[in-house]
View: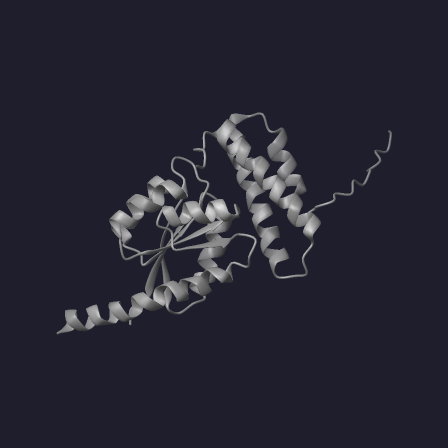
Length: 137
Length: 84
């Protein structure tokens, strides 16, 4: 089974670095790229075709909420986790409206991202394996 | 020659307060983004450390307040788009 590709989108280097470290410890994931804002995320998503996008909310040029629906247009099968300091029902609601699959607070341990990623991608794995088998036949 | 005295200043939140205050007072648009990024990084790393230990609700509230302040600076001085 191939590794799941992860795109990390956050304007802060320290955040990107920690998220990268967390996913690099997991054998089933590979970090395929990073982006510093929503606009760059759209370009990277189109070329890197990640399975999972870790998306910040507040960023220059384009917020995570604005980027999410466009990312889903480019990659309908990808899963998006909003990783943000902003919390509350309103953020959750806006995230759902924008097509985001899960919200993880930056005040939780970053490894919570991996737990969420496993849960979200578990469904994809079965489809993915079927596609791999079809491709091989 | 007069010997300079060092006056120790006790910071309430030494893991991030210095970086946060530096962002608050920075009036130079060329360095503000760096200051805000540094403050945000310090706040994030501290949040992560607190997440794995016993909760300090006062500091967590202070972090939340600091983050809100940084968001204001990002929108008003750095041109970040407003959140819906």
